[in-house]
Length: 382
Image 1 (cartoon, one colour):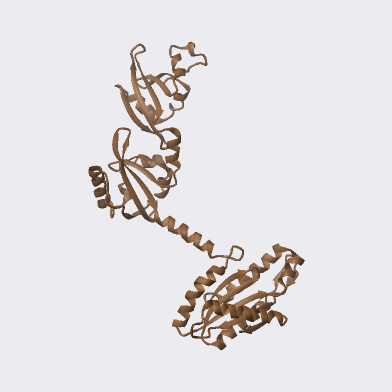
Image 2: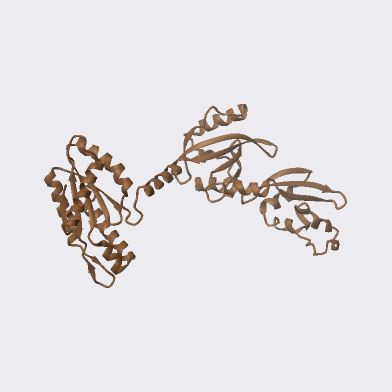
């Protein structure tokens, strides 16, 4: 295939008028290119375009999808004077609209009897394909739908092409190419795709949305500094744990902890070190409690725990052992110096009757205040 390049001057060639065409334009015959404008030159390296140029034998309008997934309209007409074909390529979609479809975060597919005609990157990513080009080369998306759901998909397609609508939108479970199970809500509708009546499918990834909601929920219930639960976690999960505890005839126990003279740590070493001390204490509390207790950071240097004890005495011994563990674990500064973490701790036990979590937390807080007023570094049960 030889290319006759155009010079900068439009009068320098018998095809000078190509420079005035806004669309990509190529003059050719039987696979040989005689001339093209600058827009057309960029298409000459595309194997699909080369193939179409070799097969043009009549006036035609065809749809061509680029490797990027954008549709182009290919129009060919005979130039009698030059005894050759003029083929022009223009975007089938207005560029901004095409970009909107391609970059839409919701997967979109256009297909004719399950033969893909157009897809955006989100659709390719959902099914873990390598590229839009790989998808468009498929004869059918049946492997993506899965044999389990193929009969329903075929029935829906036939009903849509016949009646134009479905009674309801099904929730479908499909399999990705990598074997991952996808829970999706699929919406199909009939569209006119450049003169062809075809189906457009949009997919709502229910599973991903549920995971996103779960992450946001975790963020709403988690203290960002210590990664412990926050006050909201204590109020919600603690109330649930209290009911579970009472149903098992265990002694519900609330513990409120405050670091003695924590303001002095911030003043002497700075807030960054103060934050490290809080993270260190959170790690100690979580490590000691394990799965036995709900551990939360309520505010600043105040922490709250909820756990179920076999008895009142067992609950108090558990708290005593916790304090001993922390007393024997000083925080070490980068310089090698250490900070002893001393705690004031208030404890409350379920008092029976209509006692509830907020009442237990209030009594434990009052006991904490008393422990602090008595000099700190001690446990008081309220």
